[in-house]
Image (cartoon, rainbow, N blue to C red; front, side, top):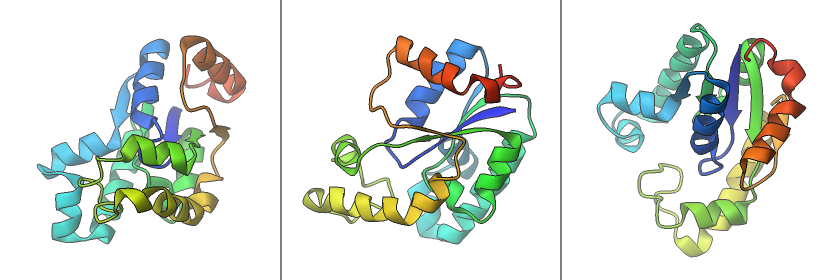
Amino acid sequence: MHLIFVGYMGSGKSTLGKRIAKKIDKPFVDMDQVLEERFGCSISDFINDFGLEAFRTEESELLREIVARPSSVIATGGGTPCAKGAMEWMRRHGVVVHLSVTPKILANRLKGNCKNRPLLADVKDNDLERTIGRQLLTRASSYSGANSKWEEEEYNDELIEAKLESIGWRMREVL
């Protein structure tokens, strides 16, 4: 079983995932980082060259490969759970946690860092929050399939402990 973080870009999947992996002494896998290493280029460049559909195919194949390995903490790409059957697959192989962050906070976190994010590359800063909000609406049904939803924007050690305890019964096989 794996602990799998889903959520919009900038929601904290990688940051929180690394902290929790260290805390529970499990390997950490950042899917976007693995894909960029495999591609030998950024995700943006891959999508520009081969298209979003090819990227989603690669992403789905990597997810299936990762869950076949021993227990780990996984930070998915923001769109990973939107692929057909992906959320069901993740739930069968782990505990899925949706990091839910408001569009305003996401816009503040992502502002000035959108050039390498294909879905936001052409969005102006003054339209970022509205664009993120619209994209979150289209992903809401996918994200809602997670086992747990965490809505905090910052995590200290005490809060991480409480959150892990709140899903502890689901995580017995992960821990």
